[in-house]
Image 1 (cartoon, one colour):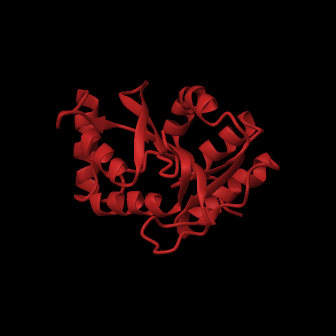
Image 2: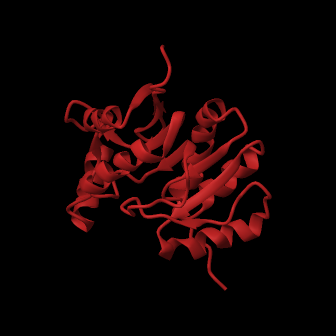
Image 3: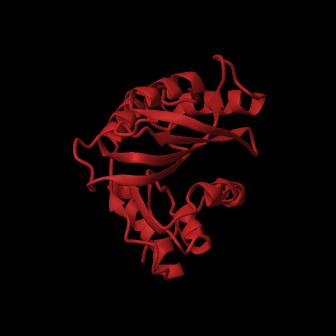
Length: 204
């Protein structure tokens, strides 16, 4: 039997995140969660947003923990978690209309973040929406002392990780054909970015 992993941060931020994504993901669709981690977000959002099909994904090693949460809640709109590493040359889907990812960009290396947005260019359908939650720097500066300390802690674990610059992330998004719809302030010095894939077939 697999012990359920647990993240206190997930418990703390799930309600504020829900308040935003409830409006962004208002129509029935499948939400692909990149880097589902413990699986707590997947279970909570699937339970609170029954009009959505929630597709959790993560690297292979995290799937048993995600599935332990899934088996406990027994939700028909929460799919089996799928193995997905952003650096995989082929992702396990034909296209995505909605994507959610939380606390992933600062765990990845910058090269992996670049690859993530390259994959978005390939796999996001026109007008697809992407929600990215986590801390960001603005104009090269931390938004709080706690974020500065967190960044130091991240880099002590992995020198390639760290809080990303908002402007650099948006530049990658624009190359991938995404435009920023909203930059939502969130508790604990985090943000929730809402991006949308531009429909190049449209005359707008």
